[in-house]
Length: 115
Image (cartoon, rainbow, N blue to C red; front, side, top):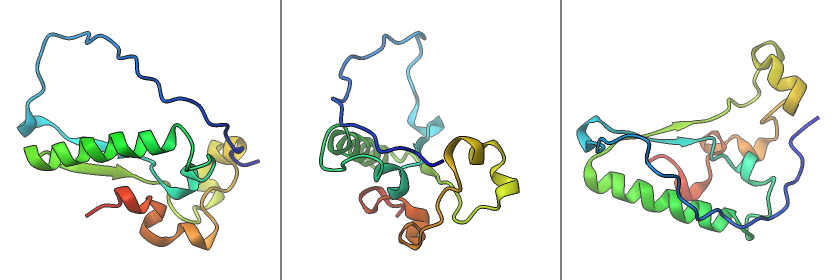
C-alpha cells in the first residue's frame, strides 16, 4: 500500500491563539521544513490548493528566517530505505521513495531545496 492521491482542499486561514506569553528570539530559533519532498507533494495536484499556498507560505517563512539569521533544517525520508528500517511505515505507507525521479536532493521540492 502506498499513499493515495489526495483531493485538493483550501488552505486553512484560521490561526490558533498563542498559548504562551513569550516572544520567540531569533538567536534561539530554527525553522524545520518537514518532509517537503516531491514524493509527498506528488500525491496532490501540485497546481491546485493547497500546494501553491503551502509552498508560498514556506518560502516566505524561509526568506524571513534568512533575513533574521535563523537556521533552516530539513527532514526527508531516506531513499530506498531497507524494509527492516521502515518497520511500521511499510505497513501504513508501503516501500517509500523507491522511484529514481525522487533520488535527486533527497526528493525535496526544488522551490524549497536546501541552499
